Amino acid sequence: MTITITAFEKSPDGGKGLARDTRVRWALEEVGQPYQVRYLSFQAMKEPAHLALQPFGQIPTYEEGDIALFETGAIVLHIAQTYAGLLPNDNTRARSISWMFAAVNTIEPPILELVTAKIFEGDKPWANERIPLVAERIRNRLTQLSNYLGDNEWLQGAFSAGDLMMVSVLLRLRPSAILNEFPNLAAYVARGEARPAYQRAFAAQYAANNP
Ligand SMILES: N[C@@H](CCC(=O)N[C@@H](CSCc1ccc([N+](=O)[O-])cc1)C(=O)NCC(=O)O)C(=O)O
Image (cartoon, rainbow, N blue to C red; front, side, top):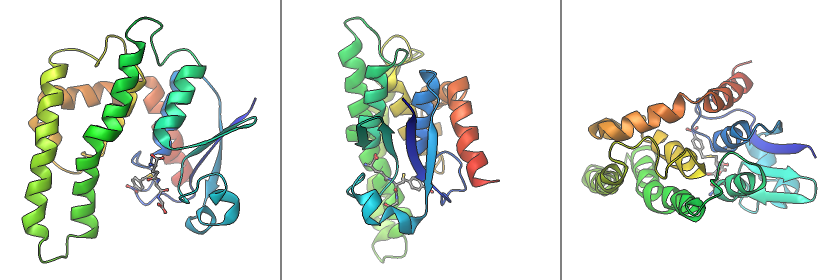
């Protein structure tokens, strides 16, 4: 059955991996599944045809036969549960899924707050007061994550969808220097980026934005 995902026709970052279709592309590359991409303009994302698929007018989405999904974490979980290669078949499987949720529910929120504070609220009179507070919340979470990861290669034994989501979330910190304050997390992210599946996903998104 053909898999079709949606992505930005023109990503604001020029296709450098920050838009969330990268996470879905990466998961599909890890499990060896070919996929097609429907590229959408910002206008098309807000039209009824796409809103029926993604109620919030965003990308990515995932279609495969009569399956139509939105929400990146749910899409990656579906891929991981449907195709081998992203979740172990032992008693650590459920905990690998916990790490997917930890990535988007515990680590990503303060990171997105920093993005918002800098990009969308940077001109507000209180921005200089707020940004350090948000940065501290990120440091607190990264300290806990760094302590847990220690010298391990991945979070829960072999590489899993939990690592895919966690590395993808930590990559959002790339524009700031915070990640480099945690050498083991910076190395963890670099290991994720070095994976051939990630490289193929990144290259595909970049090529689509830089014809
Ligand atoms: N919770 C949803 C959120 C999806 C989402 O945020 N989609 C964004 C693109 S990925 C977020 C994103 C966008 C751009 C960059 N960038 O650096 O250019 C990085 C990340 C989108 O469609 N935005 C358009 C809109 O909301 O109208 C999910 O995880 O699937």
